[in-house]
Image (cartoon, rainbow, N blue to C red; front, side):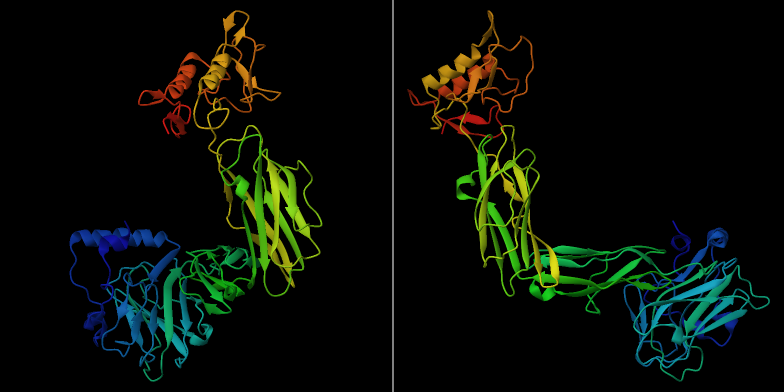
Length: 531
């Protein structure tokens, strides 16, 4: 809990400072009612804490949460706009001190600079910005700085030395402060205030950008993100601009684009700001090309992959306007999958047969739009679960070059829902001959001991498996694929696993045995009796 939490604000947020702040008697102006003893104790504790601090915030100008408020009786009344984290002085306000806080107990011991974070707004005629402090004995200390030090339209941090303090001023107990344009009250005062703080040194600096936003080239209807990274204190604030104009709501370290239209092509920059100053980033260029890239499973592979078989993907590139200077296609293949063949619009370079990892195609002689081609991949026997394929177009067009992700991103390739291994004719019925084959695997022996061991067949068999008569007893093996009856994946068919096959075989409709079954995820073998 902070001192403000314990003491409460000097003036309620959103309300004017009481009229006594404008009283002729300065003692009356900052007089405060008697506080309970607990409040006095809290004041003393807070003063001790603040004395050790390197920075003392006078006001954040937040709404709600500002320390100060408009001073009644000044022409700032009804001419100050309260924003979430700034106040804007406009309208008929003139160069008087029209904002302030009384009833304070601030310890400025060891604090030698005041930082005013503000901007000069169009129409300002006030030559000076004046900050006045008053201690508990009504001794005042006035600081004046030229408003020309504040940039027009851009938040600027101006650090001003506080010394020399006037003789007799009690820096350990500042009772109140005001800010504005002085006391003339003649010319227009137009400024926006963001933060007001005291500090021990002038070592604070504007943010340092450590990562600049990079240029991006994307395809229409795709997305990207511009990112900036910066260091500095206190809290950093961000404002992205498009062609020099602030983008509403773009106030984080990233600027994301999704389903980007051609009209988004422009220059982008971000201002990184702290209470000391603003550091603009480099100007990044976003090029949006009228190029689209898609990929999808070919009709023959729409049901997903089968381990040990192949999958075919159809790819389409379309472009409008000027033809690309070059085109490339890159695909990140699932682990263990390899390139088998391609067909369609012939590229000048393509992957080697059995290539794995990153497969690449390139066209230096650009074919007319649309460019359509397919490629076929070998699926390893060990493939399980859905796999993803990421594809992207590498394109250059005039002076622009970049990557365009293919939609869908990524392309998901599910595992095909296959019949039970015992269903060798794939009719989703297990007949007597098919059940007998499972019994044959179950009865595999090593000598006189039944092991139920099987292996993936090296030569074609009706179900792709064969009894393993050579496996030593007690040996655990890992197979590239398993029989559907082998629910614990140990390379053997046990009695309970055989019984499950018999259960599927024995499914009946009325009194007629049909052996029907269906794919049913979540069961011990992924199947269930019945159609």
